[in-house]
Image 1 (cartoon, protein in one colour):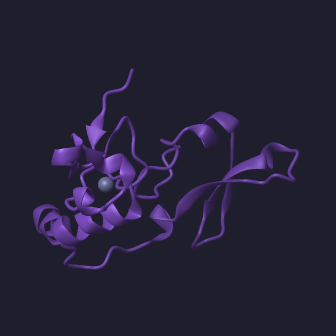
Image 2: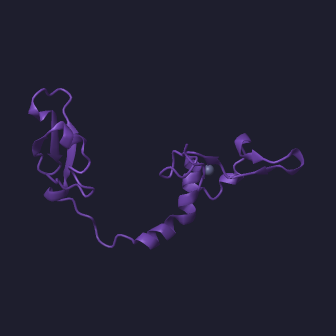
Length: 127
Ligand SMILES: [Zn+2]
């Protein structure tokens, strides 16, 4: 069984919906939503509104904490790879790595295609 967690939206409790209402008739209150899973903010917010509230409140501080880009990131031939699948293909070329800059194709096995380590998180081909 998964654990319940609270929506991290700082204003979640201010949105007036039936499911947020708690307490007896003479002492009603609205509470932050609590669920086993959420769809927004990487699984931490109950709605796009709560996600936007989180970003508006904490986004700048998150950038300050993790650091602003001070120079451009650059896409070169070395990190322009992605995996692709040709749904029409029948030969070895059905799965391939594709380079966005050179347009080079390198055949992949299905295992290589399904392995998210084949291309690292910087777009470099690792095989
Ligand atoms: Zn929420």
